[in-house]
Image (tube, rainbow, N blue to C red; front, side, top):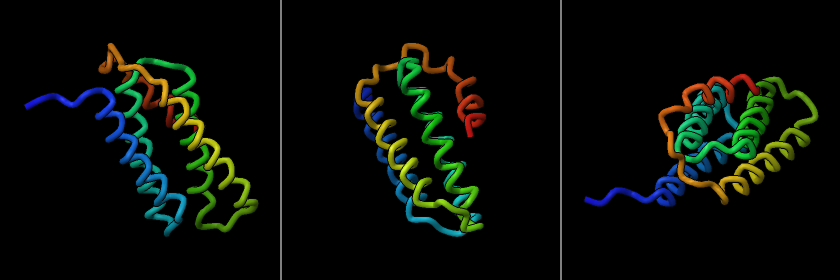
Length: 123
């Protein structure tokens, strides 16, 4: 059995992230949205463990999580301006994809536990 390459692992992680992001974009009930937000945080954290530490990728991940948090927080309230939040979400999503395109495999994958808390604090 061969081990998956870095690119294959990253592609698999991106596919999972995209599914969660699409579900968030489509909306849902407050409980479902909070579940998706938690799932997204775990997926982003796992994704960051795969790649070499890069402030641009970390900032893009934090921006994406913050944009999702704003959508989730206001999803049940109908707060305005929802279109602006959706635009910020789309831009953060694209920026995260763009940053990951140049990602390198992480040498110290197990040393990034602190980044999960930092990511969650950005919201």
